[in-house]
Every structure is written in structure tokens, then in C-alpha cells.
Length: 525
Length: 114
Image 1: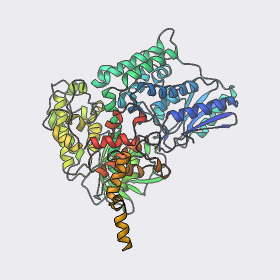
Image 2: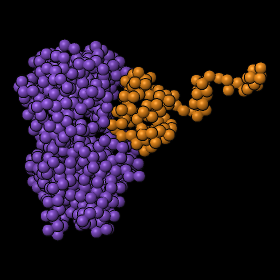
Image 3: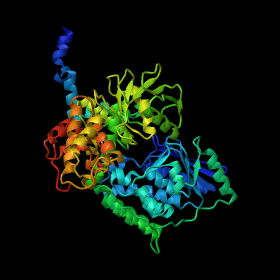
């Protein structure tokens, strides 16, 4: 039974197609890696002159290796065996005697980006759901395992490589500008661009790409990063500098990367960070009934141009080039100031009307968007298509049952009250808060002892109030607000869990809403 | 009369209620407590053809094909069943190897958290 990779030889080109069985996104697991390797060997033996790696899953090139696998791998023996299977696949692809091309459409995350880096050439579709991101350091607190720390610096230079490794999210256009991809395909798809590239390679007798060496200057300012991220960032920088050393060999660099990975996996920080993936998805599932990634079918969205906020939203939706989504005069989803008959209507800002949903953007330029459906039922399944569109457009929607003020408004007010003009920026950064720009501007530079803990308790108290009054239906939504509004550090495992294991007056309430017994923090925390 | 006579002659266990029979069967198999609740949640989640694989020894990864997103859905189903928040990352982080993410270990984890 196919796990997730098939091969087809056509016109001398081997097409390896990724399509993870039973999943809405492509996950690069050991069975899929074994299949890819098998198909690659078979195709090369049959005389393939080039290899194309592509995905059959709309919106997903490769989303990762399977967080479940990483988060449950503590016994080194079996975990090493699995890592070896995956790494061998990457090395076989990189060592293929013919040119290899990654044809990227959709999310290209983590090991997916590393798979693309193992190819000679990369082309990517110019659509918003095609973007590149390395979550390993920033979201999961471990070192990448499949060559990113060695291949990215050689391709992009040290400075740009570190930006990517530290979690800069790139769309296809930016990826093309910095040299991560070789050709940008139009929004309609990669087929024509791929044909053109294959034609060029054919005319030049199928050349492999020569290794590139870029500049080693321009290391990032590690101390400007949140405190808990600095140690791993330094380690990543050390690894990323290796390719610029004399007598460097890629296999030595990959071995060092592997050793560094094993040291970083299994720490309390990475455990808590990985657990936050589930918190994020649980908040979504409690909002709309499912965490599964589902691209909405072809959808027309109408955006009224009555207010500046609505006009800005319309511009954003058009700019983001969402596949299958069109901004039109009439649509099945409407953003407006009043109910539009025949459309799921979402009002943006202003007083709530009889529309289906009120939306609120708490931070100018930020990703957070609070949705308050008019209907009382939760999860709000009817809003799933709207939610998915907003997610695809780069927002982080959170569904609440706010009455009166929006929950995010109240949280921002609580934040302002906790800060009370105290110098706090350095303290919050050291603690790990990654404040969005719109919030950071409201905080005075400087340090105040205990301010980060105080802020965490104040925010937790407000979240607990919202849960007890039914404005939030699940603690994961509270944790997600803390993440998107204030950048609460994921290595501390979520705001409520963090406060629950402390000794503040709010700890027992936090534990109660989490439905758990309180475990006191150990010194190592 | 025949029926009454038959009743007196039958072994006692055959006249027990269904709940008691289920308890007896469970204790015989040593299924962990909360296995029925976990099984019900998994049955709602996995494809029909995999439902017969839902045994205490089954691995949620290898045998039932769950990924991280399906684990989130499983969490919601369990929360509904049990009427309390459930945080499965604690269970995931507690095992040595993905093969240890079995249905039985999940049931034990949930029972311990009560």
C-alpha cells in the first residue's frame, strides 16, 4: 500500500509525486521516505535524465516530518533508526547523478524546505499559500535535522540563511529575490515554468548544479532575540558558519548538525514548544469544529468599500493571490457594515449588527483577528470556509463569544494596565515575549524586575475571567490569544499552563480551567 | 414451567445484566479502564476498515494512521466523552518511542488524570 510517494517516468524525466495517504497535508515520514528512495533508484536505473519532485496535495508541498513522531521520540535507538532512514533519502536525492527539480506549490515547511534544498533547482508557484518556513527553532526549539544549517548558508550566504533558520516566513516572491528558488511560476501553476526549465536543461545536456559559495558575513544580533531562543540560535549560527571553513566537507557538517539535533530534542523547552502546536490547533478546532486543513472550494468574496478597514482588507485579499478565491461585487462570503442577503456576512469594526459574524483586528498590521459569530452554537461550523480563507490570507483567526468588548480588546487593556508606563521592554524580551511591533511600541525601553511574571499573571487572570463567563470556550483559545497578541514564549508551553505551575494567586484558578492538578515548577524550568 | 426449570438449571452468569457481563469480559481481558471511551472516540475518527484494529495494543500511529491533526480531533472527542479538558501532548511526551503511543497507554493516561 502506497504511503505517500509514487514515481512515473515520462519523456526521460522521473516525476516523484508526494501525496501522503490519509492526511490533508504532505507529511514526510519514514515510510514515505523509503518509497521516494525506491522510486528514485528505480527511475534512475530505467534511465531518467532528470527528476522532478512535486506534490499532489493542493496547498501543501511538504508540511513537515510529523510532529507526533518527533514529540514522542525519546528512546535514541529507534529514533536514530528513523532519522537515518529519512536522512539517507535526502542524501540519495542530493547525490542523484542527474539534475533534480523541486516544483513547489503550497506550504514548504521544515523538512519540506530541506527536501527542496536537497534538489539542484527549485521553482515555486506565486500564490500566497506557497510559502517557506523553518519552524524548528522558533516553534519547536530544536535544531533542524536534514541539512538546512549546511545547505542554506551555501545557497544564500550566512546572513540570509540565519534569517530563514530563525523563522522568517517567505512568500514565493521573496524566496525568488533572495535566491532560495530559481524561478517564480505564475499563480496559475508551475507546469509551464517546469516545462521551460526542463527544456533549458535538456538543451544543455542535463547539467547538475555546481555548488555555490556565498558570503559568510552578517551574523544576526542574537541578543535581540527573545531570551529562551538565544542558546539555540547561537548553536545554529555555529553550524551555519561551518560551510565557510577551510577544508569543509558537507558530510562533516551534516554529522555535526545531527549531533546538535540530538542534544536539542527531548529538552523541556522543546517538549513545551511542540505541545503548543496542539494548543494552536485545538483553538481552531473549538472555533470551527475541525483542525483539518481544507482549502475552500472556489469562493467569491465581496468586500464593501465603505470604511478604511474594509478597503484595507479588500486590498490585502487581492494582494495575497489566494488560489480559488476571488474578490467580487457579490459573493457567498461578504465583509460589510451590515448583513448582506444570501451571504455569510462578517462585519469589520463598528457596532455589531445582525450580521452573521463580527470581526475585530486588535493590532494594526497584526495577524490576529477575533471572530464573534451571532449564532450561539460552538463550534461555529458554518464559519469554517471564512476561517480557512482568513488563515490562508495570513491571519490568525480566533472564534469567541464576546459580549460587549471583544476579548482581545480586554486583553490589550489588561496589558496596558500591567505595564503602567514601567520600563519593561528588555525584561519582557529576556523572559521570551516576542511582542508584535504594534504592542512593542507601547512598552517603554528598559528593565523592571518581575514585570514579565506580573504581566503573565494579569493576562492569565483576564483569560480565566473570559473562560468563566463563557466568552472563550476552551483554554487553548486563551493560550492562542497570548501567543498572537503578545508573543508569549512557546517554550514555556502556553500562558495558562505556565501560570498554573507557578505560585501566584491565580495559579490554582489557571489549573482549574485547565482541568488538572497543579505541578509546581522545578528549578530547571 | 419448562422455562422456569431451565432458568434454575442455568449457570448463574447467563442471567446477569449486560453491564455486568461487560465488566466480566473486561476484567478477563484486563482492558484498561476508559478503554471503551477511547475506543468510541477512535471509531469516530478512523476509516471504517481500520476500526477492527482498535485494540488496547494498537499503535495510534502505525496501526491506526493518526497524525498530529487527527490527535487534535481525538482530543476534542475525548473531551466531549469525559466532560473535562484533555491535554494529549503530556501523554505524547511521556513515552519513549512512538510505538508506545498505544490505545492502552492513552486510556491509562486519561484514567490517571482524573
